[in-house]
Image (cartoon, rainbow, N blue to C red; front, side, top):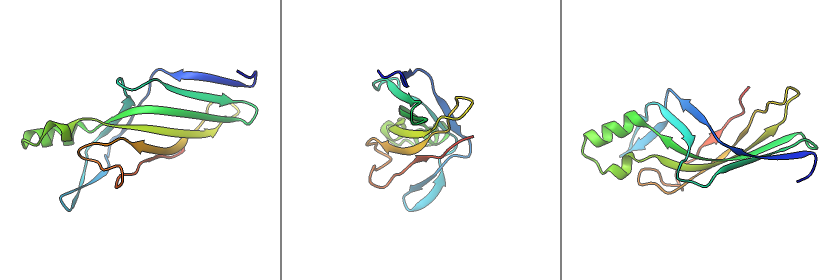
Length: 130
């Protein structure tokens, strides 16, 4: 490890998209309902690096994405439970280290295969926060 960089393990992460995201289901666009993201308990640990020499932060989050309302509806309709399972993704993000030592990360996610979401047809990004 260099003196100007710090590697760390991410031990907690929670985010939500209350308005949900659009899902194309049998030719119709519908809302997923609230989307909840948290660290994936079944994945390897998530790590990041703070590089103070370049003032850049880089983090790889291994997350699960849950959509409880949509999943509940699918189960109530008798659809296979695999469709209601959380989607898993790796979010590779980076951003500047700010003067107050916080950082606003952004990056693209790689969604793992899921019975509802085709990785070839599904994209997700994290936009910079403030």
